Length: 132
Image (cartoon, rainbow, N blue to C red; front, side):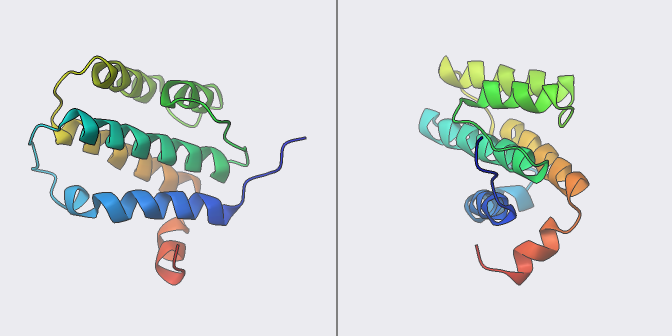
């Protein structure tokens, strides 16, 4: 039986994403094009947030790529089919080397952060109370 992931693990992942993206999340008008390396980093942040959602719902996230983790979240009813479609579309575009604007990825990250707060409304408070 797989070991359950902890709440602290979820908060640690969310904190990592916020620390790295805080300036971009504050500035929704950011529309600069991302390099392929930055786009892959954004994709990793999306994966961390999806894993956090799974942890908060009581599931241990498997070691899979972002599309498969999003599929699991979709099957569990954590994200909508539209959100799944956007995540998989961005994954394909990034893997094919398309140039993306940062605001496209920030919108997905903002949506996932809203989903996290819907699942556990105390996440924001706990991120401020404890250092992760």
